[in-house]
Image (tube, rainbow, N blue to C red; front, side):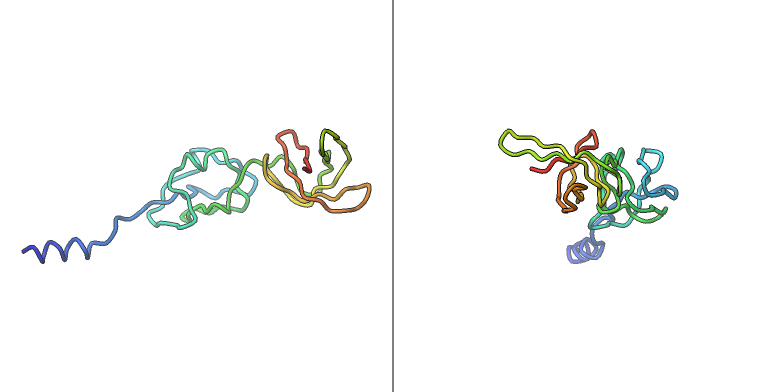
Length: 137
């Protein structure tokens, strides 16, 4: 009898985990809300298990119903768009220089982005701020 119970416990396997998925098709660039999300019965290793972690993030790619939302599929809302002219701020030891640059990618606040300095045509990497500036430290 004990062997039978042990066999049933071992053969049952782990409980099915749930991942967050899109309830309907969501286009890239859309900020996700609670109405956009549902649970998926499969466990995605690089996915989200709590919908509160996804609400307020922006879809970086098109999201389709029935597929788990992965961490690489979403990000912070975009404050710097690709090809946008942005203030480029260099800060070194109390000195601050502001130039214009062209963003070579998209970024949310706090994310890194490559920017081409329009004066020198050099490419630098900086951090996007909430106001749409890029700071080089």
